Length: 116
Image (cartoon, rainbow, N blue to C red; front, side, top):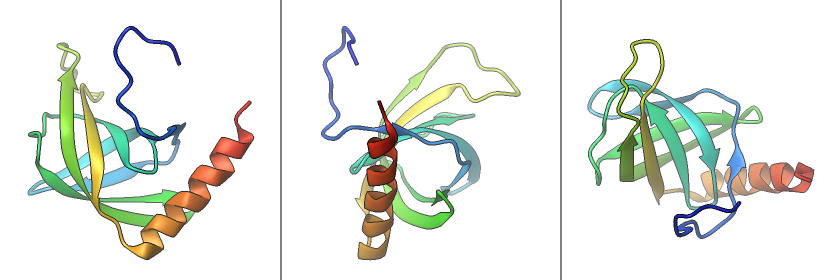
């Protein structure tokens, strides 16, 4: 992936099509853009402060996955819309148990092996 910005990712990311749920002090539905061994990129309908932690739960190819995440960066597209998310959130897995780590690794192996 060629971009003008410096690459900050420590591991390759793969797209995720499943819906995710993110629990903060409030409920928020988010769209998972991509996921890696170390974190996720989300779209949310409202800003979430950097360093805010959340419980993230999703099914990865039908396998349950949960982790505490910590928001590391946010970027608004500047055009809030009522029916679509408008804030991109980069989050890191803050607490990931062994079961979650294994589920994520299996998911990433399957998806990376299918990429051209």
